[in-house]
Image 1 (cartoon, rainbow, N blue to C red):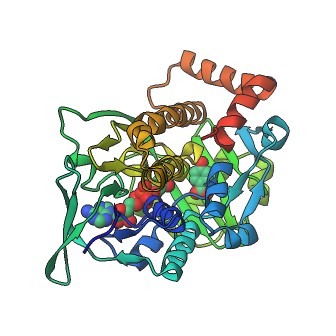
Image 2: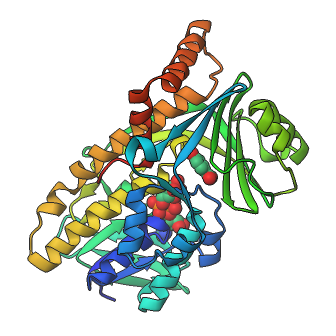
Length: 389
Ligand code: APR
Ligand code: PHB
């Protein structure tokens, strides 16, 4: 087979890239290891920056998002029983869109099918070759046969555990990582959200987050030990602990119910440099991970896709490869700022096992500064709604 851009990974970054290139008349084939149902069964975050909302429109897949998504002009920060609001709209003139990542991925698959673009699921042993030549190709196993896909470029959109990043020689590749001494226990429940806006809560018992998917589907998280497993937490234990961590008036209002999904995610910051090697270009989780506190995972994948799709359009339409030459540096500049915000927000809102009394006082002072200082709120709001591309 032959295509212009071979996309490894059928998650949100691979599909969004494929859709934007399709609309620019550039051919792509997506190679995904899992089935489509499996990819769509993953429960992930759901706060979209304005940049991603605009990209969804540019990709022609914004209709359902506009219809079913929620515009949020602000968010709530709780510190024990005290609570204050960050007014994104007043501080930045912008807002975020609450719309599940699963729905984004579903819309992109439907658009890809409608475009008649090729997506191959259940591809095993995907391996890129000759990335340091002008004629790379990808081999993979499917339906018991070995296949070869010739291409001009390979987009590594295969997530953190995918093969593409490993193709960057270790002498060239530099990886930066920070792990956090706790995880997030998340529950999805068919209950009405406790608040119209998200509540990020720092409490003496640890972090909690009240989020939502729609008027009857809520998503809640509590900070938990990394050694915990979801089976250690009955639904009742989860709801009781959540109530202890959010302001009393919210705990009063909280409607509980059976969890329809319960999982624990570790918190990690990770960045791979460079994000390009020869004809290979990494996007999304394949190159960087953020802790979920700032809801930046999907949004950083989107900014990568913005830069790479524009660079590829310049290459194919104007034979200009400057965008490709500058892709890694351009994408990493925005990624490190977003990594900083996600690390800062995680440090502000969680309780650390080794936190000294002094550290705790500083954390409390940082929360008070954010509550009382307009400039601090504006800086937080600008990062939360999304830094410009
Ligand atoms: N061959 C083919 N596909 C693969 C392989 C492989 N060897 N390894 C992984 N994949 C697929 C995965 O099955 C997955 O569907 O690559 C896709 C990567 O998708 P994501 O992990 O969702 O990464 P990305 O598209 O970059 O989206 C980033 O996802 O994890 C969240 O928080 C993250 O919101 C962020 C978003
Ligand atoms: C979510 O809705 O799952 C969510 C929202 C905000 C975050 C993380 C997760 O910071």
